[in-house]
Length: 306
Image (cartoon, rainbow, N blue to C red; front, top):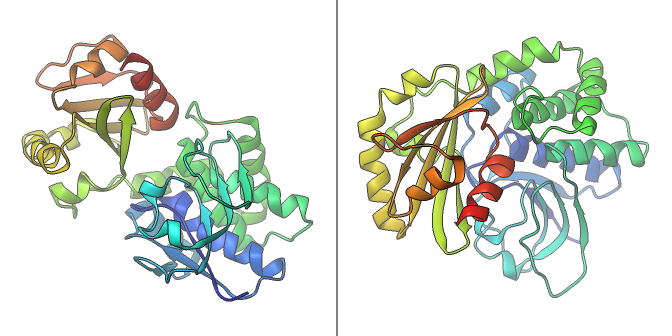
């Protein structure tokens, strides 16, 4: 069958990285021994915290795989977020929790569920197949679910996510609340990042109908600290808008403690933010109360109002 490469999306988050590691473990336990967990970008500080906590290595960094290679996609299915030659590889499986954006000319195993995290789906795969979840795997899984659901406070959170966190925390022998908050806080330290790195940390290209946009999201425990960088952020955002020929760039600065987001919106379609959320942009920014989820509280609302 040949080697199988498992990877999440570009600009990987904790779900993408842990899902590649956990899915590789799952595949080996199911008899597919020649698998390699990979990543399509650098680790963020939150994910580094998790791997350092467990004292394990990150997945292998790759840019592409050879044409014809076998791959398993986790935490994404959109070609724009994947390897450039996705059309030239053999996709064996997709395990995801996002909307379907993939078309293939052949059948494949596709498992996508409307839950808060890909790891919740993989957790169910372990249970369905009667596979043991050890302490390390449980910690990887619960870390990702906490990350994607912001300690189960995000509107993307489902009862299945909550159940998974409860059971996995017992196996991992951690207090999910204390561990989760420390992990999330580790991910909010932007002190060593350049302006450009901040604007690419968790940036996704999204079209709101005819509006070509990028939505970047950074988590923080203090919005005011990030807003001190506003002038420099706006300068670089305007450059990115020009380089990428965008109609809109949204930077969501998400407060993990109070569950709000400050948005900085630039581009000729910035007024769409005002229309969608009933706010007034003052100096290109506004507070979006209760908005923490790009998937549930940005993409559908912005698309509906575009």
